[in-house]
Every structure is written in C-alpha cells, then in structure tokens.
Image (cartoon, rainbow, N blue to C red; front, side, top):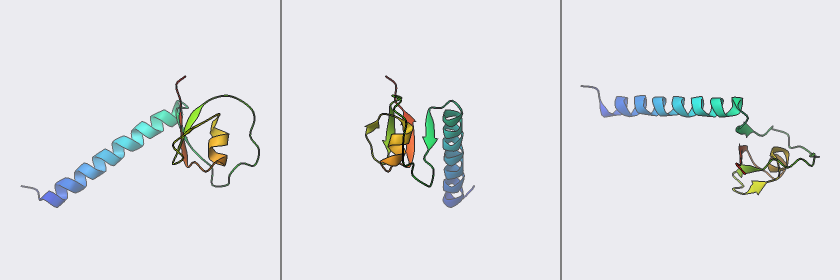
Length: 78
C-alpha cells in the first residue's frame, strides 16, 4: 500500500499537469496570456476586454492590463 506522502505527491503532479494543459490550450486559442517581463509603455486603442490577474478587474485589452500591473490576463466574454 503506497504511503500517504506518495499519494499526495502523485495527486499534486497530476493536478499541476492538468492545469498546465488547460493553460496551454487556452493560450493557443488566445483565451489567456502571460504579460511580458518589461511592461509596455504605449498601448493601442483596441477594445478587446480582458481580466487582469492579480489586478482582478476588467481592462480594455491585454496591453493595458499588463501596463496596469497584471501578470496574466483572461479574455472576457462580452
């Protein structure tokens, strides 16, 4: 019988792998994204609403979300 620590480790790896797969699929479809390390200085005026993480508010587009300090963005369905 496997130990509880081994079962917890395997569960953690499986959950982490599934989250990575979901994030990869979302990024491929343009539904989520990661902000670059250097923040943008100027953004275009295109309305494509996204939610910023960890700002937890809606921004007009991903560039604005990254400029306001978000690490990740999730496309909003409007």
